Structures are given as C-alpha cells and as structure tokens.
Length: 190
Ligand SMILES: [Ca+2]
Image (cartoon, helix red, strand yellow):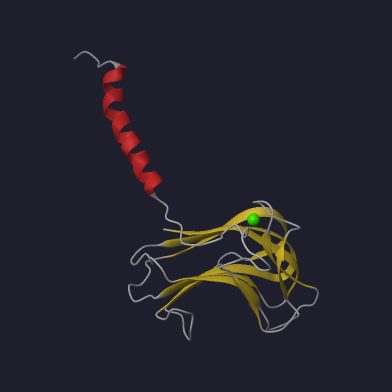
C-alpha cells in the first residue's frame, strides 16, 4: 500500500486538534471578582479581611505586586499561638455544582513559623456559617513558609455539592507566624 501524503493526514488530524483547542479555550470559568486586587477605593472591592486580634495586620499594599500596582498583604511583628487572620471572598452566583474548583494565587513572603495557607470551603448558607459543608486547605498538605519570591500556589476542591449556596476562598496567616506576605492574581476556576 502506498503511503498517504502528509497533507492527507494533516486534513484529518488538524481539525480534531483544533476542535480540542477550541474546547480547551471554552474553559476555565472564572468565579472570583477583582482577583488581581487592583480595584477599590480604600480597600480592595469584593475582598474582606478578618482577624481576631490586631497583632496581625491586613493591608491593601502598593509595595509589592505582580499585576500593577496592588496586592493583599498580611504581616505581624509578633507571633501568637492561637490567633490567625485571613483575606477572603465569598461567591454565591453561578456555583458549579458537581464540578471541581481550583484556587490559584501568587504569593511572595518573608515569614517564619507556620506560615500561610490557602483554602476553599462551601456552605449550605450564603455566608460561611458553622461547620463547612466541604473544606480543603494546603495547611497540612504543603506548608507555605520561609523567604520566597512570587510563586503560584494552588489547591482544588472536588465535586462542589449541589446543596451549596456559597463558596469561600481564604488566604490565611496561621498562628505561630511572623513576617510579611503578599497575595496577588488570584483565580477560582472550574
Ligand atoms: Ca495586583
């Protein structure tokens, strides 16, 4: 049998390849708003910062960033054995039931101790309340601490429950930590 010319095969393989690419481009769907922390007046819009005590400071920083010219910072000069603090955003629209959601964020840090973690939780209420329906964190999987330049961290929560009414993402400054850390260019996709 004579071999087919290359263009023959290109005519079959290329359309399949291009169709695949088009499908890939249809994804991923972005769930976070203001993931680059650029928008806001005195605080970044759509993000919140919470701490139990003021020993940990959350700031909207213009000192360090990946996308110009802002990021979310947490810092502390003093370590505490129980207190933690975090930046967070809660999503209630267009929840991807039954899908896996992946949180990505770029982090730069100069921290000692337990460090930081990133986490995702779902709730059957529109704001996080009581026990999470689902929860996943990098805390014990892959600790983030030390001195490091901008690097992307990621975690995936599998199979969002159809009873979910909200998904919340967290960038957490853990107890027993000192130093400063910056978060930028966050995304939550499925
Ligand atoms: Ca930014």
